Image (tube, rainbow, N blue to C red; front, top):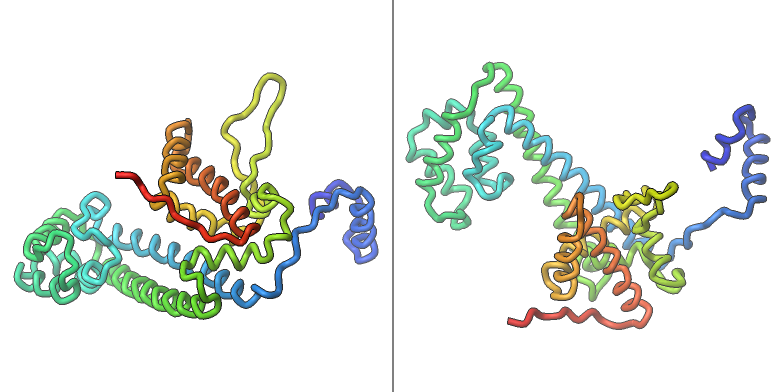
Amino acid sequence: MEGFKAVYTDIPKTDLKGAWVIADCLRFGRVHFHPPTDPRYASLQRLTRLRFQLVHHMTCEKNRTLSLRFLRFGTLAHDAPFSNVFAKASTTIFTEMTVEEIAQTPLGDVVIRISQHSGSRLGNGNPEALAREVQATARRSFRVTPKMDSAVGVALSMSVATIRLLEDQLRRLDKAMAQELKGIAAVDGAGLVAEIGDIPRFPNHDALAKYGGFTWRQHQSGVFAAEDLPLPRSGNVYLRYYLIEATNSVRVRDQEFAAFSERKHREARHHHHKRSLVLTARNLVRMVYALLSEGQLYVRMRRIS
């Protein structure tokens, strides 16, 4: 509607003129309406959409944490002593201790700290070797002023605390989603059901794909035809998110989808991973539509050894 109103450059913004523009737009008969939301899944949709927002906040907070850690420990961009930078042992060492403290603390004390917070979950199983690597990383890091280091330490500890809070909320939310929709344990499955609703709302899988934003508009002029077509920013952003997440899980567990993803990855000229993921998601839409339409269960294909 905003794009249509932009054509009328001299019309003032009043209630009367606004109603006239709406009526004029309807006269063209090209207004497309999205399928109405299925009220049976409204409660589940509140939970799945909240989870989408929490994951988005988690991603932003983790990016903030990484930037603060780089400011305090510059060599962590290249050196990775811990396999999981957001694990408890890693966040404890690099949040509660400054660069100088890590570098000057006796090796035995660093080993104790790491062992207390990691238990038996160490990647190499050798806390002493890990402690040596942590101290070497600290000694190679550049130093910031004490005032800046203090400020970064406060911000870093608060950012890590926010991540822990979001992780706890996600666990509680997953349990609530499992109780809301029994029989579908996967979070991605609950998100798909909540956003798709009653499948007869969509006449075919193309309509479902368009609703999720998996369409590509042709870009051609004369003899030129663009091959690198971006996804449109229309469609249901929540359905697109859960389809992409479901595709990530399916393509590593199902032989057919894995082969399809690998083929599209090889064929892509640009953005290999993103292109193969999106095209595999579009292929998944076909299967989801067929299963929901026919009321069948998904049977995973096993790899033949």
